[in-house]
Length: 104
Image (cartoon, rainbow, N blue to C red; front, top):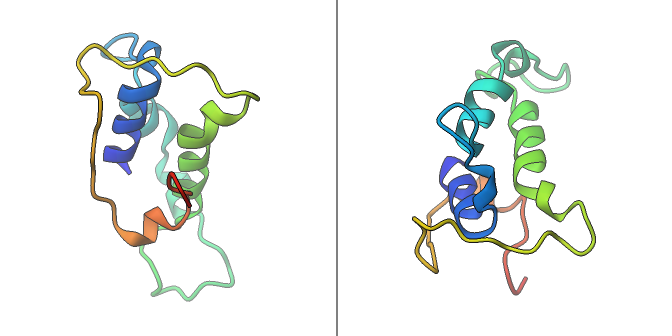
């Protein structure tokens, strides 16, 4: 998910990179995530299904990746100066299935 967050923010949300302690990755993995949230498992899932609950990760990915599309139309894209014009990343299918890809 980190690669997907970074690619999206570099290509479309340059202004989100404010400083070393205020940027998309720091805000997601330091400020937003919590051990308590990861341990909050659903009662209907088998205990051995996963060490941590995926609910918090789903919630964070929806906020971070889909947040820019909350306005209609979405905010005008602004590419970061350090970004290439195109970024390709690999993500496991279990993560990709949650988000539509261009052309789907």
